[in-house]
Image (cartoon, rainbow, N blue to C red; front, side, top):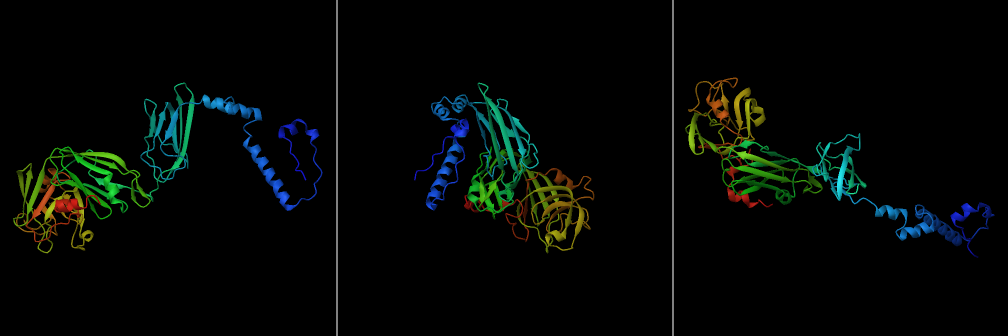
Length: 432
């Protein structure tokens, strides 16, 4: 039995009277029904595929390059717009969102949060070839970018992208010291503390470089999985410039967790000041550039609570601060709410600071503290005192060396005190 032939849709439209509704057909065998259904499906698909193409002649013209689509393509803009965050991406960088133009210029770019529509301000380069956001791009946020421009003949082009930035869960950052533009002492290491454990240590290390204008070799050393310090073999050269380049954006720190930082930081090394505390004489000698400029009587730790030996770096300065024995394992033995001229030497609570509460005159005579180095001072941090002089003449990064104590040498990771690790040990795992 022959299959019915379905006339073209154009003939039906032109002569509807010739194509009346046929009488119901007799039931067909199941196999034949499936064949007819398949043929109908092919017909619908063919109609759908040619819906934008018009009649056969128009399609032929398009193939010959004479159709409207081909004409439009021939006259299309030559401007190519590239958005760094690909459409549909889910782990886009928060630092490297850019729009670039080639073969023309950008005219306007908008970047907005998909939820709420908050706009992210940006800057279009004077030459019209690039755009970048100036406002903060948040982690774990969905954005959309629309970029418009024209080629050299004035023909317009548009590019759109909708994407999500890397989430806080899937990214890591590092807090670092010292700050950009700061001036620090010769003992100041570059120290990174990561907010997530790093397992790909070699990759992370390779994307941070620290260099000095002095030409000193600078090497990184890992303390555990969340801290990375850099230093030269000897103290930094006075007056040198140190540059650290952080290129952690999109670097995988651990499985599925990526960095989001990309910046350059420069700081200056000040004069060379190293102060030496002799526990046996209870005296501190302050030297700048190798010359003694001050000798200060001190009171170090008592025999029950001796002061650590070793090279310690000033990491914080407080005109006044509270010192509570509970915070460092001494229970309620002391709680002084206004300790003057305090400078931190260790993370475990060692300070060099002013003292107004001692009875008698232990400075230069006896060790009476819980491990700190005390100097004579007055309450309120005012007045011309040895402690105020030391505070005013000290920088973050200056070195205080303690010798002659019955206690052990301070651990390199306790504060910024990596100088207490031999260079051979420091460099032994510098590539891991």
